[in-house]
View 1 (cartoon, rainbow, N blue to C red):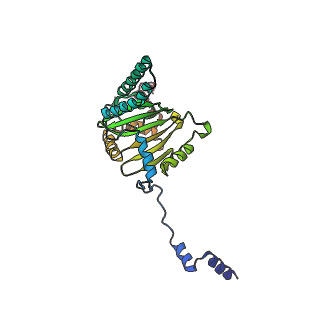
View 2: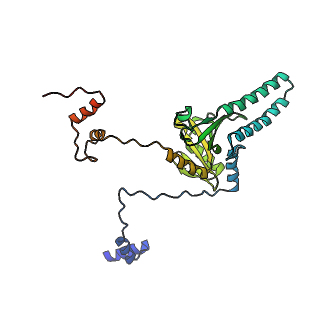
View 3: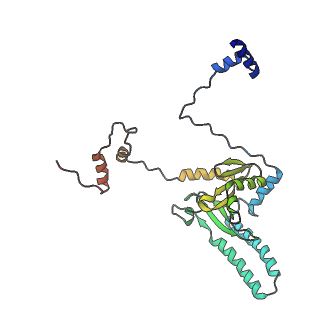
Length: 294
């Protein structure tokens, strides 16, 4: 009777007894605890023509590979178009002069925002919304523009490598969003609706084409902002190599400090910390009393 039930169960599941036996025999080999999962190669996300066109609009009229002066010239031309309409809209000479002055001030502000990171010195941008977007002493520099025309309130950062524009970072205005909508889930839905499905990572959504990488970044917790970034992946590889080569050397912890910190003796099994060892370290720093005399 038990055998009949077993045959019926196997038949319902659709497996032959031999297949079950082989499956039981061929168990997967145990994975080592320290084994790292294989790195998945970056895939190019298929994009429709409409999605590619929408991504191209992120350039804002600027072109990757441009020099600083070329970026400023494009910006000045854009301002000409904007201010010409305002100037023509009034016959007040004083108002027209004020508009022309405002236009010159905007160009000057962009010019003065230029900063070179080609040194080991710190900069005001080291703790900012773009703090992860550059490195020092690697041939990188930046311009910053506040875009507040046509109801927008966002900032565009132009990043240069060896004098050529390779990346733009746009900090978006989220003040108009209600609090219950100010989250990455809402941001992701909007971005994917406009640019198509992207690769999702923690607080990040990415799109990749042959000549463009784009990413949406969640900066809500640290800077109450959301950002869009577009960059040239070919230049990214060059910059990563330059940053690696210029990275400061790691400081090796002294053996005495390790002896104190390594209390269980895993790294130095023949060295056991004691109160005398701790006093030795403190005396070296001038923070401990002299050793007691017996």
